[in-house]
Length: 188
Ligand code: AMP
Image 1 (cartoon, rainbow, N blue to C red):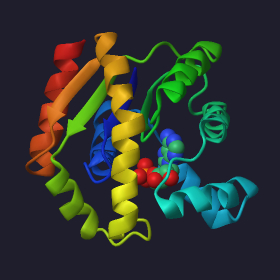
Image 2 (cartoon, rainbow, N blue to C red; image 1 turned 180 degrees about the vertical axis):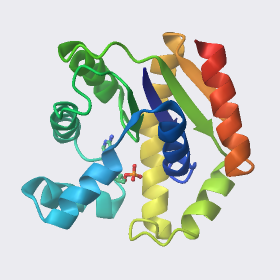
Image 3 (spheres, protein in one colour; image 1 turned 90 degrees about the vertical axis):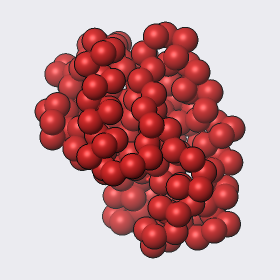
């Protein structure tokens, strides 16, 4: 089972990822967490990613795809094919690359792409309360623009394949979680 979680920054992807990985016994792969881990360890990849992350821009596809390929090579994933991707893919090129990578490791195909749909007002409110260094108003605007320009086409990519599970992301964490679980059951 390979599930993708899509949503604007501040849509609740991180919170729902934790619930979903526990409920469905999936390995959680968050590209944002992987970048932050590299940053914290001061690796060359982290240093490269830093400028993009600080500006709220996407890290270039080839860098991001290579990082995900390395992560998929670890034994907890390899061949098992039970993964929740959180924050990846964020571009259509990344979505294409993911299909190829999954094929290479024999992990099966993407089963469903969950899109957590929230209004821009909610996103801005939630991010303002988070206090992350890339959550200041200018950076938030850039991140939302990147989502609209680069990531919205990814929603269309999975919709065209009949894999999209779009859920209303307004309301409590429990409400949204239940909608996602119901959507995944209906998609199977
Ligand atoms: P996130 O925690 O998912 O909001 O990601 C934080 C930052 O990491 C983003 O604003 C981007 O700069 C970078 N990032 C995370 N995932 C990706 C991705 N799939 N492609 C490009 N950049 C990413």
